[in-house]
Length: 270
Ligand SMILES: NC(=O)C1=CN([C@@H]2O[C@H](COP(=O)(O)OP(=O)(O)OC[C@H]3O[C@@H](n4cnc5c(N)ncnc54)[C@H](OP(=O)(O)O)[C@@H]3O)[C@@H](O)[C@H]2O)C=CC1
Ligand SMILES: O=C([O-])CC(=O)C(=O)O
Image (cartoon, rainbow, N blue to C red; front, side, top):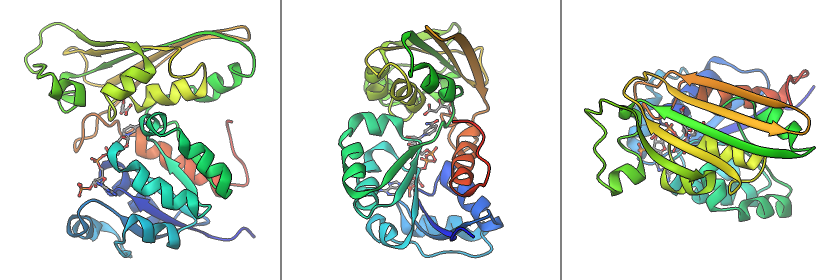
């Protein structure tokens, strides 16, 4: 029998609450032990739906209590959560690809302390195929993201440049460049582009376009890969969450699938 893994959630918002509820209902081999969040009182109130509420602690305390830390906080909080977890040799499950690009030193930190960072596929698809293709030679990787304007209004670049997206009648391209630059300008909106870069050609060599598209009701990502082993093009159309339209519903489910693979006797997909 494998030992039950103690799980801590850092960030109890749109993604964190879905993960918390699923753990509370029961996931084999996994036990929710504590959470860390921005505002502890808000987090305690948000736990009302759990049958077994857990303590709200600091990110540092969480690293001492849990074997697995699920990080689903804003990009700016990433290091406060990742550093103590990795220094204690924990498994860090995250969807913050943009934060990993900003702080590549976390990989060295994980190596040094025998920890592991598991960047879940999140709101994207096909990272298994991209990783496999990267074992051969990839010629090019491109990604086109189209989101309803309401999913982009809170994006850093849009706010800082005072770009008016509400009332758009035609699609507007708000970014074209590398996945690295896109992830810097839209850290909470194209984590998936950062993850695609990390899986394949690297974030500098991965080309990205972001469109605010009034004709879309879903957050849509199309990736196109040309490699010596295969060519493929895939599109995912994510249903935006009500709480945070920039975050697709599938993101939290991807985190659950990643957690499941930590204890499952059969893992499907690389
Ligand atoms: N790869 C992917 O596919 C995707 C990745 N993401 C990433 O996941 C992150 C979370 O997304 P989402 O759940 O929608 O975001 P939310 O804004 O809904 O939730 C974030 C939560 O983090 C909490 N928080 C704030 N500061 C800290 C801190 N210092 N330590 C711990 N928790 C903190 C917030 O608390 P409070 O409200 O009290 O401040 C809030 O509860 C995003 O920032 C984004 O980077 C999101 C979507 C897709
Ligand atoms: O990439 C992200 O961070 C979020 C996203 O696009 C989505 O939910 O579709």
